[in-house]
Length: 432
Image (cartoon, rainbow, N blue to C red):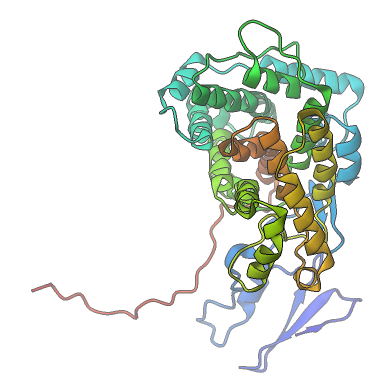
């Protein structure tokens, strides 16, 4: 395979089985259309060449204008804005508007958006009964997935996905109601009466109030904790074509309503390899127990006996830019709540991993999950809430990706191919 010259923007492929040469167009981003490979055949009756790519590690399923990642340089941008600037200066709803609309809002546009979200924070009382019907120890994420899926029956008009105004209404509803659903699952676990939304509060304050308010007293979160939650929400708002986003797009490609697709994306996030990574970090730190045990643990990692959770990333081959922001946020939280006893272990692990060639050669740098669990635990969240805390802000990204897919004329219903390796044709013979 060779480049076919910059002047014509093609790739020349020679099939050594037949000697035939094929020229395929190179599109922006150094990609070719997979369907162009179908031209490569030995016989006219052949299906044609396919690419075999388990896990879609090198397959682009869309052109997107939302999130840019350069994993080799540790760059993450939403709509062109560096994540460091957004996390340092913006509010979550400001970033949500940016991701959804493509541009930062003017002050009046942001006010309107905030008011729209406030109007939809309550959920139907039948949904609260659904949450109450779960066992006291039901997993928070399972409860939330079921509740979001049930919402499709409350808003049947959501199936009209080609009406832009209708789509926007469902998008706002989901962004507004996700914190309420999450807070209600928390209260259900605790055996506490539900604390309903207080729409005089901002997005983060309202969520914290629904979680921790006692009786009729007003709840005023510490500004540092409120800001920490805003930062964590901003960092998790979107992350390109990951597992759950792909699930959202695949389900949405059948023209499903956004609630059903959103529930499917949440189910993908529920898996321990995706939304459960920060909980795994906490388990690892608790297993290590003391900084004295770190050398032996790291040696066991090198021997392949244990995994270093919270290090390395499928995309980032440098330091995850979100990790450094979260590390700074963690220290701000610990100044208010006191240091998490696991922090010293985490810091020493990071120091060793960043200083030893074994880990550097394997690109085992801290990722976003390494410190987020420590923050959530210190703020009083049980570990089973961690995936749901991920899902609240990622709702913005999922819905933006879904709407981009709906409006993309090149998109079709998802239907991957397979390479069949089963039995040849054989006759049926009755048993006995």
